[in-house]
Amino acid sequence: MDTKMSTKNVFVVGFMLFAMFFGAGNLIFPPGLGFVSGDYFWLAILGFVITGVGLPLLGVIVGSISKEGYKESLKAIHPAFAIGLLVVIYLTIGPFFAIPRTATTAYEMSIIPFLDSPGGISLFIFSLLFFIIVFALSWRPGTIVDSIGKILTPLLLITISLLVITAVVMYISQPVNPAGEGFNTEAPFSAGFTEGYLTMDAIAAIAFSVIVLNAIRGTGVKGRKALLFGTIKSASLAALLLGLVYVSLGWLGNRVDLGGTAPDEQNLGTFLLTYISADAYGGFGAILLGTIVLLACLTTATGLIVAVSEYFNSIVPRITYRVFVIIFTLISFGLANQGLDQVITTSVPVLSIIYPIAMASVLLLIVSYFVPTPRLAMQIPIVLIIITSILAVIHRNGWVEMSFLEAMPLFNASFEWIPLLIIGYIVGYLIGMKKPRVQYT
Image (cartoon, rainbow, N blue to C red):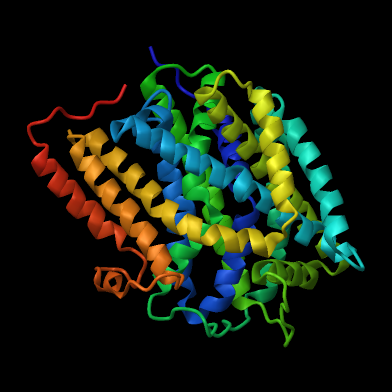
């Protein structure tokens, strides 16, 4: 018999999931998008919320289709693809990009405002202390619900609320900022949607889904149906909180009056948040913002170290979980010392390839869960999307000119993978009509 999840545990697990999602990119990208989108803000932020909230929510829920999460369900496409995609995703949202970004963002927004001459040495010292704390929190994965869901998340929500509520009251009568020169006013929804890629949340959901399942099991919930509904409730709470914070931060960026000041070489999002917090609270604003950033980045980095280490331990069990924690913490520490802008710049092309593949995989798993689907109907669109995503990134970055790609439907909006997903599924379904259907356990 299924054991239902209590309301208290829904809040605890939901808070934990919110805090793990709400990290570096979740803070700096919404206000930056709000600032440059001008009168197109609501369309842009809608696209951002779909990528940064809707897809992660969907991703976590789909992870509960199989008892072992994506590690098992992605085998429906192909066992080798399951391992390959998950290894790439875990390394991307783990030690190669997302975890180092949490440290560099925390440094830029929590420490630099208090330094006269920031530089490589101060970044090194801060990132060393940052990863010592993350290492300690990650050492015992079973305590992550208590340390994040019950303690750190409430503190994070309180500090965010203090900043947002005060700033909203200040800016409520302010006019909207004009759209930035580089903003795509012809496709504001697409601009927001692709900006949401940089949060990495949709692919982080694939990693976090296992932590959520284990956390829900830890509350005593048993049975596949109860796990599914517990996941839906917890993920929905996390998504609601994320959506409220994203829209609020984006709205502040859309209305803030900088009075002629400019971000110089600083990341736009970090500059805006620093300015807004100082505008709202004066000298105390830097302390408040620093606390928000430090809590957000610590919780996300901890969740990612746990998720990545648990996954690699599951596929290479001869190496213990704790050894992987040490390895990935050290790699993240090393890469964090590149600085924030370098980490973001390097991650963009990689994310532009991975996101369409990950989103297509999640959508195919949903369809095949409800509609009996032959394996070919999942494999053909994935192959097409992998090839096209790689070529599109090469073309868009000007590495090799492939103008024929621009003739593809929705290419200008960066959604060329959607027609491929639909056409590939139909073709694969017709070819494999007499083949066995995919089943999940």
